[in-house]
Length: 479
Image 1: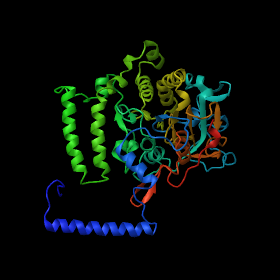
Image 2 (image 1 turned 180 degrees about the vertical axis):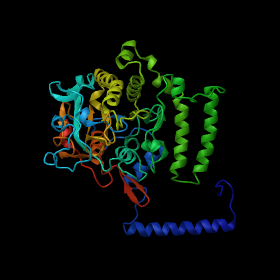
Image 3 (image 1 turned 30 degrees about the horizontal axis):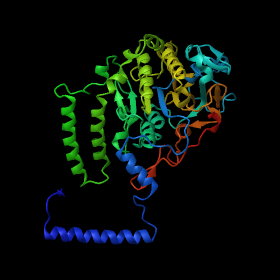
Image 4 (image 1 turned 135 degrees about the horizontal axis):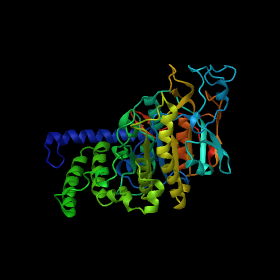
């Protein structure tokens, strides 16, 4: 590699001059023919800004939501047992489902009625399972989508689709796209944080990757099993240097990095490394405070509960309150909602661990005036069948299902107290107002003030976006 600060010989000077003149001539010809898409275009200016800064940027149009909390129920919760009651299953319990009842082919096994009771809640009368008694108190804030569909009924492609908009290609995740589009409001904290305790979900860190987007947009994983902020955000401080010494050392390193960068224009990886060093230094002043739930009042801590899920939800609120743009909270990374056996006891235990914390999060956001511009999303990558997993054992479970499952949203410009979409009488297929994951992503970006067809990044000769060439905004659920 040539050092630009060393003198060059006559041959080198002639070589560079010749190449420079040729480049100028080529640019002139391309410009005259209207073929030059250089740095003057609005998209390129945006890309250059986005690649070099995490600074907050204006949306495409006025937004209803400023931030997202995505509660990911890893493994695929059963919609039949949570938010989509199917009383017809009682008629077929233990029997093969009559094909006249469902327009879909039987998935195998026999029908299995939910062991949980459903009741109507709130003024809206949304039916919610007994598994979520605390969350049910917020029924009028929930927009329940019962007609979600995805492409494949398996975990890894399901996670990739829900997070990255594709079942196989290594594309950026939704959080990275949001951060790329809007930046973050706090330069002393990562703009995209992933709270995932005690192990990783299927596909691991690919769920929060930046892929070809600049590295500064990758999610920052925090192992939230720990309650001590010293362990949650370890190695932030340097015990052998005072702050001013670190600042001078960083300035020296960054000066050398910038000198090196002059020979590598538009190197996003190098720019991301420079930005990461700056962020790590700034995090010393705020990161531990942001993750320390003991700084909350006793009443707030009791509201969430002193449990793993309670601490996760409280940390999520503290992060978005401090300007973090996108927080993803995983539940079930170690013990997933993947109930192939004993769906009754496994779902009861999982719901019990998160019901109060989720209800507390909604109540806390609401009392702080934050729910109206914070979009909360809950759901998994797939759903589960209304039939029993074969072979039928003493504690039956449900298999994977992708053509009709449930998620819910709250706040951030969605209509509360609404049920959107419908599955057939036994829950085998979404039959009304089907919502694909691409549609969910398009709607989320719309609520954040981003046009999903315009939020793109050029890579390998084509423009990529979160929704690829698909996606429609689900206007029916917007407030």
